[in-house]
Image (cartoon, rainbow, N blue to C red):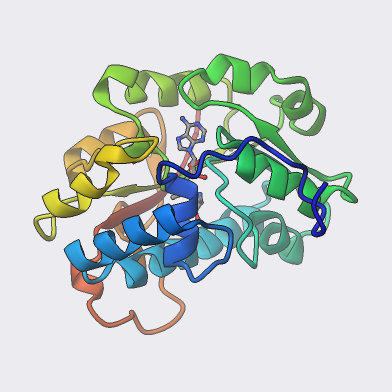
Length: 265
Ligand SMILES: C[S@@+](CC[C@H](N)C(=O)[O-])C[C@H]1O[C@@H](n2cnc3c(N)ncnc32)[C@H](O)[C@@H]1O
């Protein structure tokens, strides 16, 4: 254990990690020089990158409040990211204190920080797992202990699917997860896109990172919602999904789509 309670993990600081680049862009401190350099290159390639990640995070908060406000009491958040206040369980439990949250991420440093943060919580836990193997996520004993798949679940895939290539078969992965959810469940999803500006230079920043960045068009992102009904306003650039404040500057260029959808049958 280190001083802040984070268990020692084998941290690879030779390559930028998506979770740590994102943390750096959000103004966090859980990142290394290699991630900071990648984040700076990303911000140079896509000037609205920092506003974009904040807008994505704000979308996540509004979407979690929406689904918990709609009565869901269980959240499965795959692609958790490093702790960022307020975290998903804090947002959800501020609406309904009995919400249970299972976090899943494939980055050991995220799991270590999550464990340190959550060690005293019985309603929240973090699992080291990979979205590319959805069955092992669904069957993980810690996930099963918190999430009852006979009751509605909010599945969060927020800013994660763009780290999967087509060879990973992301649509099949989402379908496997969807089929495990009962009616009344929700999908909360956001995804990077190049629809609003040429983002090939931003994409290139991830060429030496631990995961590539795979931008997708509106139609490609929409297909992830197959079997769900998008709630109003449908798929939107994240600042424009049910905003609760005036959109930030440069919102029209923000390269993140976001949407929330309900499984009705
Ligand atoms: C950009 S962060 C998003 C964090 C949070 N969902 C948000 O939107 O604020 C993406 C996260 O997905 C995780 N991730 C990437 N590929 C993954 C995979 N195949 N399985 C599980 N987690 C993955 C990364 O480690 C990182 O923590």
